[in-house]
Length: 153
Length: 340
Image (cartoon, rainbow over all chains, first blue to last red; front, side, top):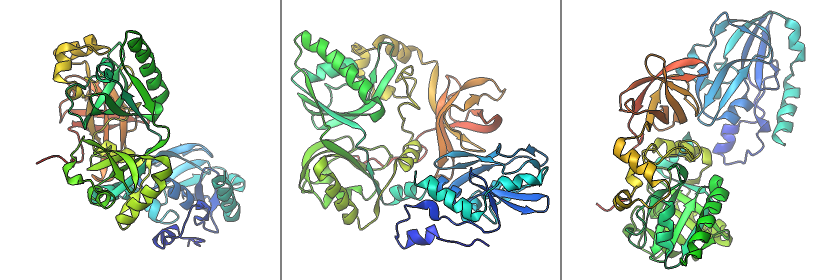
C-alpha cells in the first residue's frame, strides 16, 4: 500500500498550502524512472503506471492511450499517452519487453490514474526481456529526492 | 476541471494584466481606427464596444481585440499580450502616416494599470458591493469609467468565458486590494483561477484564441466573425484588406472555422482533419476535454461545404484516426448580460 507522506487532497481540504508538490506519495517497494513512471517487479513481470507526483502535475486525466497486448516496449521509450484537461504527456516504459496485459478499466475510467495511481490506475504489464534494467531505476527514497529537486528548479 | 466548473457555477477572478490596454484619443481617432479594424466604430454609441479584428493588406487577422468607444474622441481597446509588440508597431506606423496628413490622434498605453477579469454568475452581485454605480444597468459590451473599491477603474461588461462578467482595468497600486476585496465579498465563492481553466472556458464558449484559431493568413470571414464586420463597413470598405474580405463575403470563403466533437483522446491543435474517405480537409486549431460537457470539444478549419453541423469527419491523433463531427458553437450556452 502507498505510504502517504503527505496527502495533497487532505491538505487542500484543510487549506494548507501545498506549493511544494515534492511531497506527493511514493510506495516503498516500487522502482521509479526519471520520467515519473513506476514499475512493480514480480519475477519477470513488471506492472507499470505513472506516479502520484506525475498525476498531480497533470491534473484531471481524461484519456489514457493504451498499447495493444503483444506490443514491444523499450526502456525509456514511449508506449502510450495520458491526456489531462491541461496537457498531453507521453508515458515511457521503465523496462524493455512485451506488453502482456493492459488495464482496460482506464478506457472507461481514466480518472483511476488520479485517484489510485499505484493500485487501480496501473497502465500495463510487461514481460521483461532484460531484468538487469531494473537496476538503473530509482528506489522510493531516491525518487522522492529527485522530485523535490525537480520541483525546486 | 473543478476551476472551470466553479466559474460557471459561482465565479472566477483572473489576472489578465499581461494583456495590453490602450487609449486612442483625438478628434479623428474614430476614422483612424476604422482604417485598421473591421468594426463600425463610428456607429458605436459612446460607452459601448465590440469585438473586432485588426486586418492586414491581405485581409488576414493581425489580432482580435475588444474596442470601446468611450466618447467620440476617445477609444479604449485591449489587445493580446502575445501580439503587443506587433500590434503597437502596426498602430504606430499607421498613426504616423495619419498624423502626417493632418489627422488628430494620439495614444496612451496603460502600463501603469492592471487588468482583472471577473467572470461567472456571481460577478455582478459581488462587484456591486464595491461600487455605487448601478451595475444592473450596465449591459454586455458596455463601458464606464467608475470608482470601484476606491480606485478609478475602466469597467467593461465583457469577458472570455461565455459567462456574464467584467474586465476591470485598475491602477496597479490598487489591483491587489481590489482582487482581495472581490474574493472576500463573494465569501470565497469567486476563486482565483488560472489561465488553463480560462482556456477551457473560452473553448466551451466557442471563442477564438489568437495564434491558434486565428492567424495572419486567416480572414475574419473564414474565422466566422463576419458578424463583426459592420454593415456600413461592408458597403464602404476602407479598412486594410477590404477587397479580399468583401469578396469573401460575396462569394463565400474557401475554408471555415467550425466546432468539433470527437471520440478518443482530445484533439489538440494541428491534428489533421479528414473526410470520411480519409482525405485531408483541414486542421484542428484548438481542442481539449470539456469539463462541463465531459467530452472532447475542439475547433478547426475545414473546406467550405464540409462545415455544416452534423458532417462526419475523422481526426488523426498520433497516427490513429478517430471519429468526429462538425457541431455548432458555442458548446456551452453563453450567459451574457443583455437587456431583456
